[in-house]
Length: 374
Image (cartoon, rainbow, N blue to C red; front, side, top):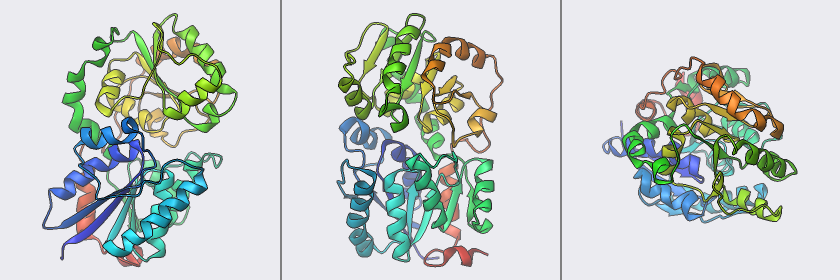
């Protein structure tokens, strides 16, 4: 079989963590693959973006689209407009897109319209909440993808129910966990808690950034309740730039205090070092639900739904609903979660990228790849 050209598109911090192990695995197979990396610039802040290329060893992207911030429509349109000439010039055999962000949707659309095969990493996840932009991105990307790489059993059921070809679905595991496994020693050696005067098990990490919580009246209530929690457990809140701006507009003091610490975003190694030693995590993120399950750290998710139910069924995750009042229960819920038997989901073993590369070596690629798989 001739050498295959794979073009991966990333745009945000979670994308980098999902794609880094795939980029590394393709590089280990130079006779089988040529790999090209495109960074859309959806996350363009140095801490939210550049530090991850350095920490994860991905190296510099081959192409930067520099789309920057904007509405969902503006961001998606910019990626489509700027990516199309790149694909026409590069002529890849397959475009690989991870996750559920605007860059994912845009890249899948452009490639599909050009007749280039699309592979979706983390396919089949569903929150069944169409008010979340990420849910729209997932559903559309899956519907036009030729290869669907899933990391949890329910994803297959969702895709088949929506009419996906069974031969297009590949259960490969979780590439985000690949990254965690590869970086585990560095994470354990980082000692971020101790360096910041935090007692292991004596603090809770908070990440809140989704519009449903951040852009409305709920954020001020959440901060007030976090201040109350901080009387029992120190609260460390690495605030996303959007969240920090919103806090400032509400008149919330964003300077780090002694017990409620609102701090700048952290790099991958430092953040997971902080999480690994925490009593628990309060989040509205998707990926953190997975990382805490692997690390065995209690996770409380401040959302009405999750596209990662396996982290509740097998792992350490508890869904609170989009209700800041539940923050009052954080110390008690963390203790309850600690007593619950948790397991790591199947194939979350650090080898998902190998399985993806194996699939990419053996399956037909190009226009009509799905129908050719049978």
